Amino acid sequence: MRVLDREACGGGAAPAACPVPAAAACPLPAPAGAAAAGGAGTVRATDRARSSLRAFRIPEGAEAGTPAEVLAGEPLGSDARAGVRLMVARRAAGAVDHHRFTDLPDLLAPGDVLVVNASAVVPAALDATAEEPAGGGRDGRGEPIRLHLSTEQPGGFWVVEPRHPAGAGSDRYEGRPPTRLALPGGGRAELLAPYPAGTSVPRLWLARLDVPGELLDHLGAHGQPIRYRHTDGAWPLAAYQSVFSQVPGSAEMPSAARPFTEALVTALVRRGVAVTPIVLHTGVSSQEAGEPPYAERFEVPAATAALVNAARRDGRRVVAVGTTVVRALETTADEHGRSHPGRGWTDLVVTPERGVRVVDGLVTGWHEPESSHLALLEAVGGADLVEASYDAAVAGGYRWHEFGDSHLILP
Image 1 (cartoon, rainbow, N blue to C red):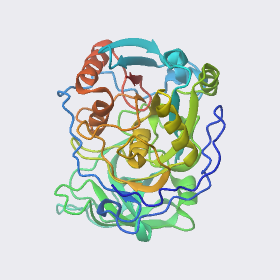
Image 2 (cartoon, helix red, strand yellow; image 1 turned 90 degrees about the horizontal axis):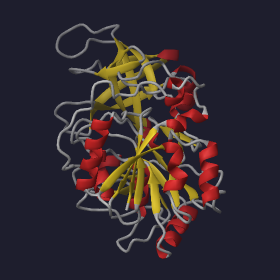
Image 3 (cartoon, rainbow, N blue to C red; image 1 turned 135 degrees about the vertical axis):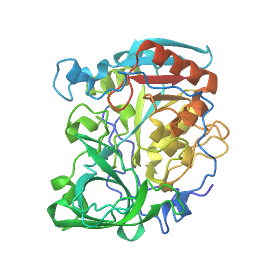
Image 4 (cartoon, helix red, strand yellow; image 1 turned 60 degrees about the horizontal axis):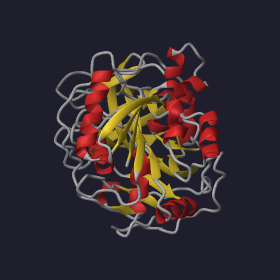
């Protein structure tokens, strides 16, 4: 594997109780070529994201569409967000047990290193209107489209996903979408080609965007958070941020961190757990079954790599908060199990065949059937433990999606 800019910009370690990335002001570069084509800063991997987990269905009523704190009758963003359920799966014991997320400090050990994603969500969904007929011979002029912006590409192009509005959420667009869209605030979008190239049933598109002023400002004025059909309301952007969110850039929330609160982070630090950041800006999470994750921008600061290496040298555990953190850390890890600072683009796919080199445990949510994330979970916990966890989650009424319950995988 090749990593450009392995010596990342960075500085001293951020305070453990206030996990702000030391390199937060350092911009992440765009790749020299299309991300999926192995341009500058891209880490290549060819493994397919296949899980051995047998097919399962999310039980009826298990799709969490309302933040946990709101369900508890508390204000949005309050500490009640930490009241979600937490299943703990231990690889050595081959067993699972059940807790609340507030128990996390007691489940980790002094000296453990907890690595979090400091990326913040931007309002990456725009309500658009078709300016020309859609495919299939029907006249789609004036058709409402919910346009999800995923990942910026070289030359100012974007990977986007056109979808059907469905109340506060959205559904997949069936058929070929209109290629010219009017955006709010006087903007325009043109869908140029399916992404990645050669896709037989296009879901994502490479697009040219033309908006007045800076795009981030335009999104702030006219955009909304990306939401899917399972959502119960038009929750504001604040519902999709975590206490670690500092660097704007993610299309969707790195949701594993949502149950953390400032009080819980303080309790972890008092326990002797080190908290340290990476940044990985996520694209859209609506991949179809078996579809690998796409290239994403990341940064592993030097201070975080040093903490990871010190923990591994001393026999302490490195626990990633979210699959995004696993992807970033494993991108810059070498074959000897050492973490290195780095930044750029990664299309690494973590699979059971590849395994993990620096990550020992994982805090995560509950993923869709046949999601590529399941293969990553198996790389950390093993196929048998992951299957046992999902069996227990289905039987025990755990809740899925960004407002749902949590899963802690430990050695």
